[in-house]
Length: 202
Image 1 (cartoon, one colour):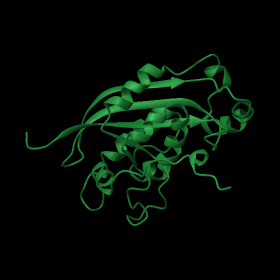
Image 2 (tube, rainbow, N blue to C red):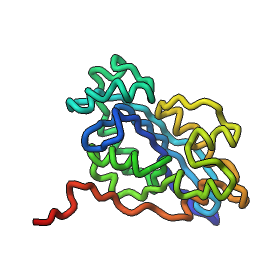
Image 3 (cartoon, rainbow, N blue to C red):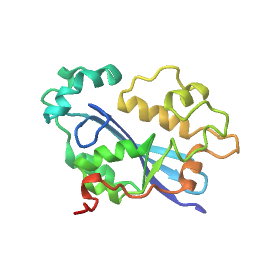
């Protein structure tokens, strides 16, 4: 075959706010795909899923209205829902690499629910490409989607976001490489270090 084929997992979370220990994930979308390690070419989409869940903590519930202005998911849509943990974990176990836009955010939230995500190789599609050096205004997903004529509108629904992100990763950068290849060549992120686990003095 002359090249290796691996499995990538692109994911996105929608949350009740910005604090991984005080807010909660209410939506998670995952898309498993195969790709060539030599070129970063996406070969096939293998499986995808999207899950909703109702937040449980008081702080997360209290913050819901503010978060709604961003993601637009009515509380009625998440009420009584919970994540299908067994299915979600099969995605983690199958993936050779995990990609997300601003991956440190997604990982910090998912770690609270699935600590094993810290053992995965995470790659950030926002930081692993020198978007500004390439002439883009910033590395925000919507900015990049507009600049590459993918879409002018971002729903902030998780499955839409990762579908658009996959489209972006298939595009060619100004250097002539696929963006996915550049993201992977930059290397994986360091492991997440939750604040609570850091050694306390005194």
